[in-house]
Length: 393
Image (cartoon, rainbow, N blue to C red; front, side, top):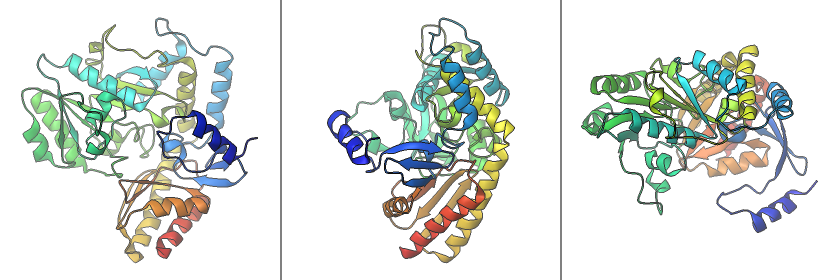
């Protein structure tokens, strides 16, 4: 097996350097652990950028994909497959009863949602209100919806029609609505924006504004969906139902996939010829998606997400009481943000040296999206490392 140095050399020669990468080559994963090319083991508290919510290589998903890959890998969406239909049914039954469009990623799911909003809305209505701090993806429509100017530089002109308002400010949303507004689009919990958890009253206020003004409410649940908050979807965590919901990341336990669900009276507006995804809903992804849903239920992983969230909240709240470096703690199931009073990049580096992988977003928010299959004893061990490094700081 090649060393990390040899693998990095390959990248230096042949891979476009559009990512800032850590100087480590990972070669294997199992459950909450990954190993590098030199055999060092890491506890992964940000597995797959939040995609591997059930750990690395979960056996039910691995088995389903292995069986499927020997039977049918890919056919175009001009044909029917039982796997895609079953996957759509399972998602629909666990959400608000809508219909599914399948694609390959979160940004593609959001592109589909943007198109559906424009196709379904009355003529002349095309604007979508989104929020400062939001992150909706990297393709041109999704980046235009993203309320962070740092991601726009050099890409202008963006897709027109997006209005950014402060997160949590219902009055600002109300004032932004005009005769051309078609929808409000929001992450029920901002992920890349710093694990910002709104009040239920704010999200319900958005629902009311949409109902009063004939607008569509779109929830980007790419990071919050499929059990992350301890509910199947974050809209259930808050008790506020959208018209359209986008999913990816955890939907297939790390296999590339995305989906958009829309209420049945809205979905047909995405009519034939208006949108497509060649690999969307392919048999491999569908097999992984079905196995993921079954695994959640068979192993009671929604309850485990709640239990992990409770442990993080307890321990981190205790830390915040004695460590002035912690400004705020935000927890919703297995979605955790620790806002520091100082830049947090040092925590990523120091924890990695000690065999713990974490993330820092927005400069000073430690973001943790651990696998809900992580034993609580391992959660405590990792939190001990985090506490020690914070105390050193």
